[in-house]
Length: 185
Image (cartoon, rainbow, N blue to C red; front, side, top):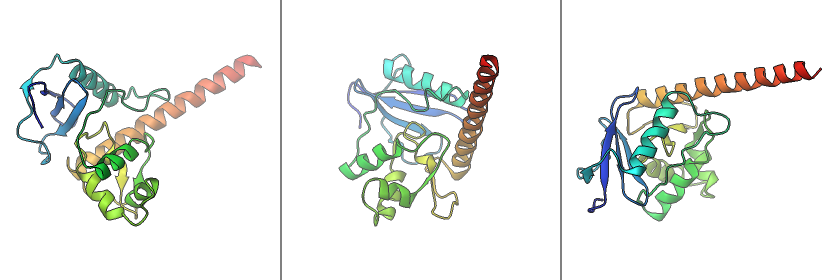
């Protein structure tokens, strides 16, 4: 994965340390502590690399609950490497709305592969961009939380965090709309 342009940096989060890895093209990886998919060689340390700085800022905003109606996705450029099928699944993951979940079946259907739920699950599990490419939003067909490379307890935390901030922002928007409507009458 690494070349002389690959850099990494570790940032704090409510879930413990997160390792970011990037090159000049974009973000290569976001790994939680104890995540087994993190490669051994992440390049040189560089907390000041522009991609690392942007990813760190956006993750801090995410954890602080600052993702709003206007911004519910990450804008940091992505440069993760995978098979064509994995890349297709990872792109589809980005379509899952903030604060919502899809089943593996829903994800398979979204890429026009309705019989590939297991293969989609495998590709989901290989996603190197935790949180940024929201693989944590995929759950079992029964609604049960299933595996997550960062740990099921972290998946539950992320889903709860998104549900709370999503609901808070929806309530604020509704109250704002009601206030404007009252003031106009």
